[in-house]
Every structure is written in structure tokens, then in C-alpha cells.
Image (cartoon, rainbow, N blue to C red; front, side):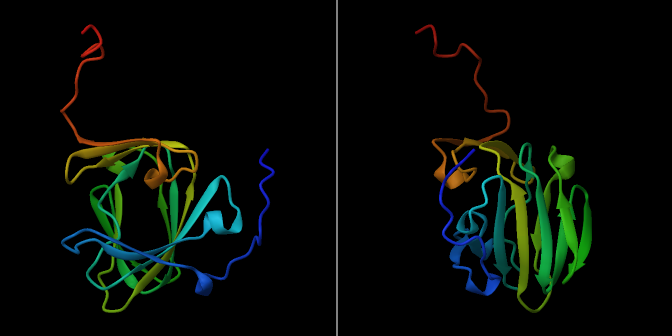
Length: 170
């Protein structure tokens, strides 16, 4: 049991502090507001995500340990899940269960106004994330479930493995 003192277990989404997130070519651009740790959540993550028209926050990906659930607050877009694409709008609740590439997912703002959604997730300390479009994967281990704070993190391409004993007998 964690006895960490919680300063205030309530945060209005309008008071969320955002950070800019995105790729150099701006295909992936979003404002991300981590909310779970702010209110003291320990096993659930919550992040408010704001995406401009034509953009995605994240590449198409699948988690092997962390399950996600999204609630669309405002705007319209598309939810790519496996081989299907679904239209989404304000009021929609969207599941992203764990699994392989058949459960990979991505939200895109295909509308002409801002898309705002709340992402809720389990907070496992370790995860394996597949990126089917680029044939990459990421593994990480961190105390707070955030890959950016990981003490072990690796991003690589499928098929570039080494043997179990490679480099051990030298």
C-alpha cells in the first residue's frame, strides 16, 4: 500500500497543464495533459489529448500489457483498429485492449475542428508496444508506467535480434 500524500484528488479538465508532443515532420502533433498522477492515481493513467485537424497524436500501435480506453469529449475523427477504420465523434467510448497487430490502434482527427479525448489506461510498470506500420517495437520498464521515465527502454525493428548467448562467451 502506498502512503504517498495526495495534494488534491480532483482536477477539472479545463485546468490541465499541457505539453506539446509530436514528430519532426509534424504528421504526429498533439497537446498532452497527464492527469492521473496529478490527482494521485496509482494504477490508472489518464491523459487529456488535443489534436488539430488532419493530425494524429501517436503512430498506429498495440500494447501487450497496457489496456486503454478513450472517451471523445469534442470533435470528430477516425479510429483505426486492426484492419478496420471507424468514424468517431463526441460522446463515443472506444476500447483498445491488449494484443498484437490485430489490436493495433490509432486516433486521427479527420474533422475540421479540434478533437479532444480523454485516454484512460492501466499503468503497468512494463510494456511491449508494436508499431505495425514501421515494423518497430518498444520495450520499457519504469516505476510509474511512463516510457519517458523508464530505467530500461529499447526501440528497435522486428527481425534485428541477436541470440540469447550472443556476446556472453567473450
